Image: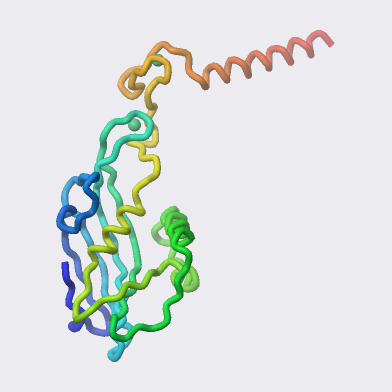
Length: 204
Ligand SMILES: [Zn+2]
Ligand SMILES: [Zn+2]
């Protein structure tokens, strides 16, 4: 969606809209439950050079496959981000940081509680600059990038997912199987070790 930037007042302008994931070509392999939702505020830094700062939140529910039990599920994502848009006609010096490092920082940033505001130095590192032409910006690319970056490397249908038994292949979320568990084996050997220590102490 194109957002007109000429009408943004200096105090900022709040916008929110929904986007069809297919319309912004999010990813052919990903399907979503419902639309992608964007909610945020657009600011401009001053009247002459229209640098637009977008502070927003993206909500999306991608369909993922659990890394433990292979069950399909929808993961509710809530992504907070900042993005700076610079007019192409008036480029200004841009500090390009290593992209991988930036991603790492972002992932680390996600782990923080929502009420913790990054300090100014930190924020500068997390912010990318995007060039725009004419009098409108599009958040499509930003939304695409933010959603793909937010996808977990190993999605879990639930933090308590018990996974699949490596021996018999049973889905342990549905019912337990009778195969000995790794942890139990470990416990047993630990218990044996304790017994051994006790026995030796008793002999002393
Ligand atoms: Zn699972
Ligand atoms: Zn089993």
